[in-house]
Image 1: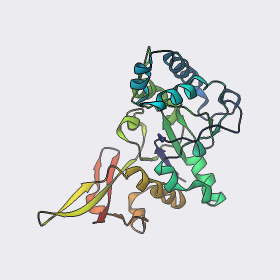
Image 2: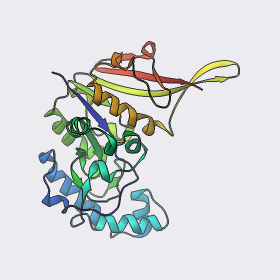
Image 3: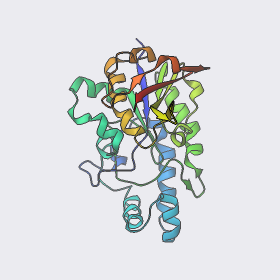
Length: 263
């Protein structure tokens, strides 16, 4: 039976602290990524010795957040950990509402959801990770732009999983971290608002709330084990978005679909 694989981004927001051992003492998914992970971790820790202005630029933060992020990054090798699904606290994860799901649905998410990360490459929801700050689009000394560094490693790692049907819910900088050509079927999703402007109906891409809207979609795709966009016909998105099959476009192995809400 074909099962969907769902790719999602991490979040800028993260829980601090931890209750589990440091990540090197834990059983991580995608074991072949340990060497490149150590390479990125080492480069990041070394970069935390640079002047504050350089660290701020690298990490994409300002003010007191530079010192906070620097401290977290310096402690990566020995810091306590949390499961990735608890570490990430952004709107996608709030909407997914993992802690409130049934045990059966949690198990499916644990197995079929893959989280992309500038530091870890890819992790599963139950993988134990420390607090950190590093974007996939960052450029580390001697490594370069992380999406380019990770691409061959993540493509190889994902190629060892069931990639018959991949729901690619990644933003551009994370999607650049793998080669989608390895998937038999790749589904991408856009959320569009139908608005009236100058007396005409127009479709406008949702950007600010995009991640929040994807949280409920992840839950539905996993629950229904959807491997075809047509399975979204009966999807009742909590924010009122409805699958619009007439807006689907197929290019090679990729199907771009749209969920539309009237505003």
